[in-house]
Image (cartoon, rainbow, N blue to C red; front, top):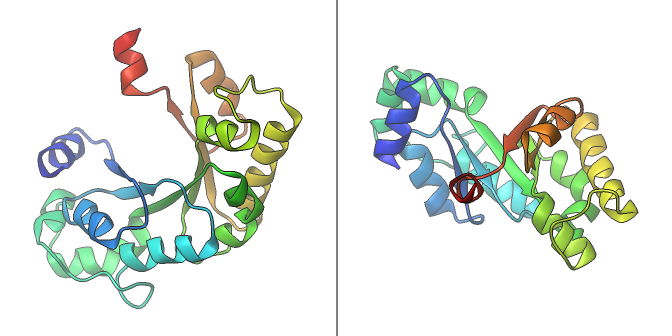
Length: 190
């Protein structure tokens, strides 16, 4: 992560690191490596979102410790400036991709310090419908997406999603603040 975040940031791109759960040690490690933000998958409840915020924010919003000096170097600032600015400048993103997450999305979006919710449509379809990928026209899938977007908007959060191709991305950008275009394995396969 140290090499990747430094290389990505040097090109003027904001490196985000995707984390597989609410593990504070993984969140700290990613941010201490210089990530400009984290994306934590499979968030089902506001309590889980609160753990993510607590692990990723410095006091008074969270419990993150100073850690390494590396992130300040990556951001091109000194350590005190990094610590003072990190809570306002690093992205804390949680992924909503389950029936339980959709049911609790309003409470998740209400958690102070959550900056963005991101929809994992494939896992969401698996949880809702029992199969992937969703066609996209299933009523329960469309309602879930609409509920997530509405909750994010109500609470002033950014909302994003994965799109499987350029055509879908263009359409999704009419609704979402950010879109991840496909993923590395699909790109290599194609």
